[in-house]
Image (cartoon, rainbow, N blue to C red; front, side):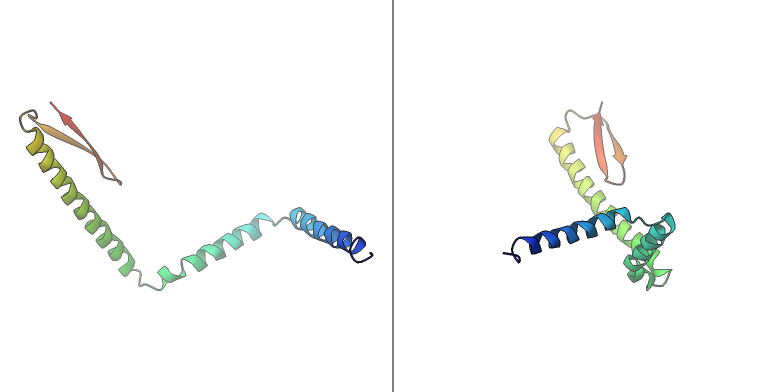
Length: 108
């Protein structure tokens, strides 16, 4: 009877005290900032292994390939629109919004 009733209550009280103590303890702003900086450095350590000149080139190459792919798709869509509506469209003006390359077609 002692093991089931009183022992269980003591264990719950201990757990509650630990939780309350953890909530009451707060880090100073400096400690929090240091912890965030260490986390950021550990997450970006893979990028730091590249030479500093290589990463921007990879990024530029990726962006250029992405833009070329999107522009080709846009060209195909525009050609299809033109063939479908060539009797109704006199001039086409495109409005691009980057980075998602959404566009709006205005006809006059």
